[in-house]
Amino acid sequence: MHQVAQGIWVPIVTPFRRGEVDRAALARLATHLQAHGVAGLVAGATTGEGALLTPAEQEGVFNTLREAVPKLPVVLGLSQAATSAAVERARALAALRPDGLLVTPPPYVRPGQDGVRRHIEAVAQAADLPILVYNIPYRTGVNVELETLRALARDPRVVGIKECGGSVERMLRLVHEAGLCVFSGDDGQNFAALCLGAHGTIAAAAHILPHWHVRMFDLLRAGELARARRIAVALQPMVAELFAEPNPAPLKALLAHLGYCEPELRLPFVPASAELVARLRQGWDSLRSMDVQAQLA
Image: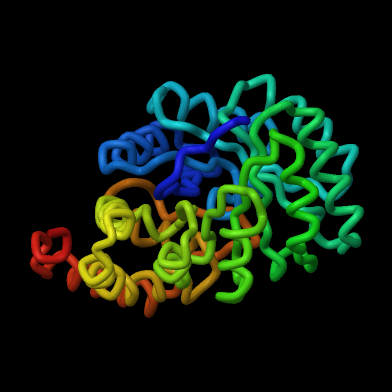
């Protein structure tokens, strides 16, 4: 059975400069994240504006990451609605030899559970790569039920799930009953999900102070709940601000302030408001003024 690295993964942004992918900025950011201990990267998914990239651009993003951080696992996002298109895209992405695919159930069309299962099975068959199911019902309109996940887990290529917006009960059942590696994808719930036994997170907020997120994960794995909680409490106000307006606009605004990339997005995304940018900068200053050693100890 294929394995995926547990821990803190980052769904890396796609930097743009004058409408084009800024590969130099992408490489710098990836190198920074690797140096601070993240377990892997997801490219061309929600935070990476994957729906707004051309196939050639997504392939260019992957090639840039492979060159910049060759030892770091990279999973690519796939979110086509038509199964035939998803299969075609899966074959093209598989030719790049990524470490896996993050596969969204067909968005907008809202198929039944049998349709969701058959869609993901077709992608797995076409790609022959490790598959993470991306359950994000507030975007797709459909929830991947536990029974469907159990059926999918019978295929050894379906190795995990990125779970967004579920309940505590669902997260607990996923961890103990689905037979998959479970990653939390809802940043406001990541600490709770890890406490419930999730194997890691795919966290946009971990672009910021990634070593704090990694340390929190490591402390929880060591049974140091109180120390891990201190980090989670310190990070929570920033996490909230990063999602106060549609992701990834706030994140790109703060990354621009820190010198990693331009704040540029593609329509229909628009830049973060001036008021939010001010709060993000204040939040960053507050985090940096904390006793870092006390938080990470």
